[in-house]
Image 1 (cartoon, rainbow, N blue to C red):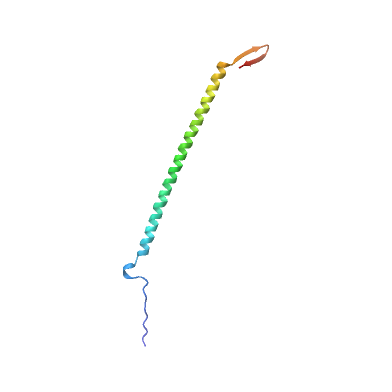
Image 2 (tube, rainbow, N blue to C red):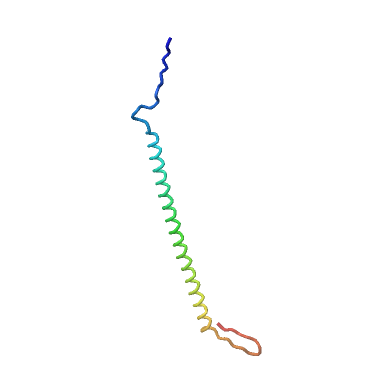
Length: 91
């Protein structure tokens, strides 16, 4: 008695390799998305650094201007008198 063994194919002849194609497309989209996110985040970081640098420069300029203005006011508006070993500063 002959027994027939039936081999069932899970893939049809024209459909072999489709999973690999979809996996490659999914990985491609994932990599493109990752690169886009990295570019966006680096742009955000550089813009933040530029804004921080501008704020630091403005703060330094304001402090410098205040110090220079205070020094010029104190030199011109104060009257220093020395009498009997005591120093009196009149504003």
